Image (cartoon, rainbow over all chains, first blue to last red; front, side, top):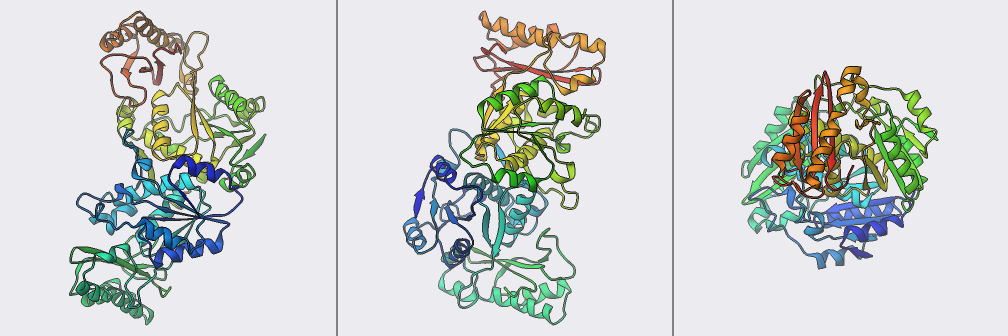
Length: 281
Length: 281
């Protein structure tokens, strides 16, 4: 496994791989957990070569958000990656991606989809995500990119970006990995104190209850959302949504493939989770 | 020479070319003239393969602009291209680039540079340009892209976009081709009636006079701009600018590499032109 820190070195390595070969790409912000590893495993089963990027992207954090505190541990990540099928780790310093001498003046801007859900609370977040993912896709030139369903809105926005801007890559979405008690794995779970960690599994239980109601015939979104709200009274709810998983538009009636998503605050920690109806994930 | 109309077919052709080979790309809106041909000639001298795209991009035309009337003549373009080193003509229909069933929701948006010069008069023009050029670059995956200096602000914005978003391509800028009387070649020259066509060469003469003044020691931008204005009294001037050719910021004092640019209206036709100081073009 090779570690590459510069764009120029990466491009040299990329030129040795023919465009006819399959190259799987897993973009991450590091502090890897089983969720990331499941993406990497699937990528290595399905591709000739696998690239994992580790980059904590400053432009997707708003003012007052956790860019500074976001957990980082490259040595542990490196150790974990050695037991996977990863061929190249792309691990650039911030100044390689955003050169301080050449202030960025071009952004990739998602429109409608970025105004929904997370977009209401984190207004420039997705513009930062699509811009850095564009940069990474242009450097890595993958044939398939693997994303976690955990960030359901990000999935919708990046899928749409790939269609809109004709990136060569296909997008594969991998189901959310969960802890034994159902809590969706996230690098940010490390922020939870033990009391909040004990409360957190109710999020997935609430989503599953709504899914169950839907399975036995309830399609009214208000009823599904109220069921979730009634189970999360101990948490600080930011939103509960039943939306089309492509357009992210709110649905008055749930349908197969719709995304039920939730954002809550537990202490100072924001947690998001979602399920896709009819997929049991 | 092959004509390809679909993205999927183009991708198949692209996969046969190794990433180690050089691929020159000339994006055009068709109605080709000697200016385009000089870009294509340079591309074919410098690359293993050459792709020319012909696509009149609707998203870079504002409301009330000339999208409908923009001149098109594919048969003539095809004929001209057969006498060049072009290997593939990418000539997609509009619906291939903007599928009507999947409304575009992601744009590539240049910021500061797009607010200057043309940006003041054509507010969403460059957003349309960078979005379609991103699409084309993602489809064609060129190693070098050739642009004409004629569209000087476009050159600055696309160069910056390529740096900001880490496109693999290099950008090569080709000097403006001019008619025998100095008028910069442009597909839009076809709009000029004969009386306005006779007036138009004064634009380049005015630019050359400012250049001459600069060569003999005058660096005060106001004096250079007033010289130009005084020569263009018969035309309807939209702007005269002395700007940094990368940042497009106005300069109070001209310097080598600065861009002097002009936009005028002659009847219903907008004409733009520019020179770079110290390059004699």
